[in-house]
Amino acid sequence: MEVENVKALIEAGLSCDYIHVDGDGRHFEATIVSPEFCADAGMVQQHQRVYRVLGEHMKEAIHALSLKTYTPEKWAQQKR
Image (cartoon, rainbow, N blue to C red; front, side, top):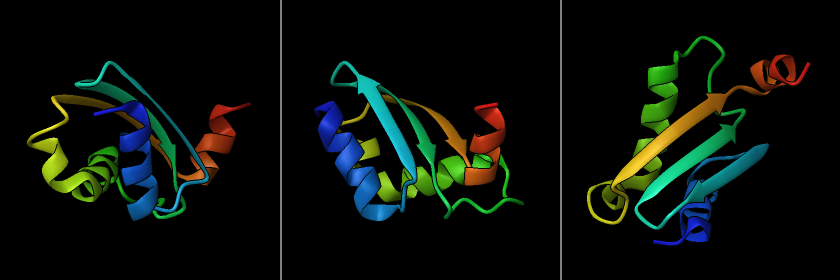
């Protein structure tokens, strides 16, 4: 699977203010900022949301996915 495919799948299932995906075809890293991530939801819940969006691709085409997820508010704090 190509990086652009992973990015497109995430964008199709999740509203993203910012997304960056990198990888080698089997192992990927993604940074995602989404207003759909609840401020009171923990990192695990945010990552589960992304895994649900990717669905069966997580079982077949994507061997490993490292995630950094942020609400827009947390992202703004991170950028300071």
